[in-house]
Length: 212
Image (cartoon, rainbow, N blue to C red):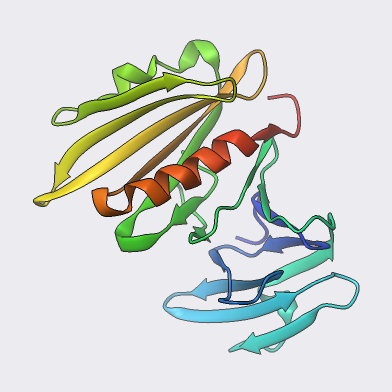
């Protein structure tokens, strides 16, 4: 499929992956990122430490970094941001970034965390096309919290999944005067605080890049 429209920026680099891909943070390696291009079950992986002008590169099952990712110059800030054409958000610690499955255009990327937790984004959509968050309560879910802050509105829901307590949050961010972004996170209740904080970081850091 070639290059996609979600990319990673920070630490002097812009990283444009080749689909299907995964971004991960190597442990105890600030400023480094692991990029994998999947070929079936085969992983072609590049670990890159910036800046782009003279990156340190470690390859696994790849002859060159170009087989996996395009490395360009990027912002020097020591923060990783996930950029799409209309918006960007900060990449929370403890989550891998995955490309969505082929044919799934409902979200530009997926984030996977501990014990099956997941965060995904929908939008930007016109505010008139986003229902009130309390209407997103599904059968079997109960409302735990509903609050509004200057940066976002959020609902937190509780439910059971395979006999285990789970939590789900929906953060609504007004990217522009006319368009909003919904950030949905779900996890076992044992990881609810970490996952909610990750979704909240993304909501607070969401920035429109172009007119939605």
